[in-house]
Length: 409
Image (tube, rainbow, N blue to C red; front, top):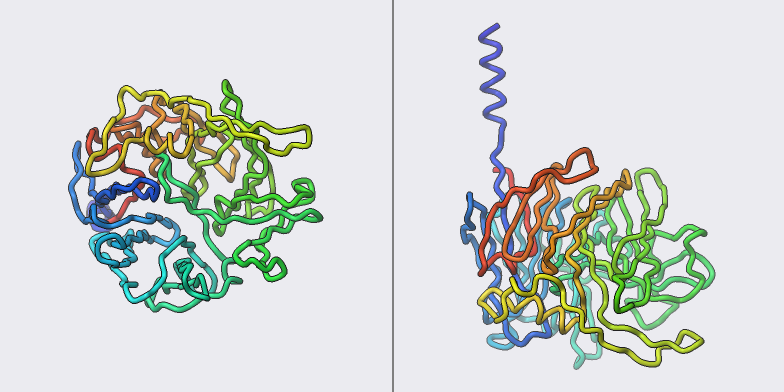
């Protein structure tokens, strides 16, 4: 009996993998002239260990996107101002020490956007654009297994995975614009100017959610399990944060429902069954006539709470949060939330800091940032958060950390 217990103990010990947390600092924001270094860090108790430079201060970082279901991290950078280089970086989350850089230097196009195309073969689709060439844009796919590049067709955008957007008022959104129909629930992808040739997205809204008007919408989540589309939101009011209504499809049960969230803008990303968001609203009030047409726009000078604790000047890792929110005209009241798309259970907490965001949700643990601090807390019975633990505090690096992942090694 003792021998069997010992063998079982040895077996379990050998099969336990250590979990390593990685945090990624980056500043993709086109409208700020200055460029900033982007770095991958490995977490050690109370500190961050520098592992890999994603981009330097002489390169423009277009996006960082992590597709957890596919164990891949993608980043695109361009040295257009300095040397004309174009690079796609691919990191396998299961082996983050092995990093691939693909060269696009000979391509006479600039990358504009990207999506993960998931059909028989999985491709990262890069939307390249050149206003000076007759064929103004091309969709170039990179095979995730072979890394072979090939041109994709617009119809393939019907099969994409969409993971949403990080917080912190940066520009690394993953979404797909679509137009609603005036007569049914179809959603049209405006990838081409010819309306008749626009692909129809494979998810169709149920009749009780038809908009019955042509309206530009953005799909913010589309995975094998879930689909999320904001279909309605309130106008901006000076003393209100407003609301948005999400049309949600649970693909496993084929059930639709609507969910109302705080904020008249939606900044959400998905982690398995959870969508994680920070409440955000526009600081622009639209003045409309009796027919609903916009006659004017008024800026509302609302400052996100906690400004006194935030950095005021550029650092080597990024620009101040308030510079970005001022440019984008956004207000963050300092509220984070989780919504379980399977059970519809909702968890919300206030941070008192506008610059706060959820970085990762994995195995019923949520990792979130409040300005220059990163915490983790357990999710208890899908109903509430347990006591948070401070992982790291760093005034230089942490305010510009917007992504995280765990690698089992």
